Image (cartoon, rainbow, N blue to C red):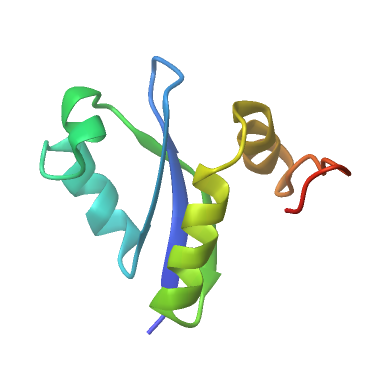
Length: 91
């Protein structure tokens, strides 16, 4: 089973990062108030980025990594498929 890390963005330019083995279903749940607390309060999210992994553990590790990044690095990942590399920090 394939697991994904995904990034959602809404009309307020808010970003949400999560992981799932069924991204389409998960996005739908977020937008109907059945997802995380953040997405319950802030709806109308669209999928803007996705990475696929062979295991849930790998996907969760990547999710945690991306969640720890600055906004600029997340935006670069969304735009170009790669983060801005900070040479003073580990990615």
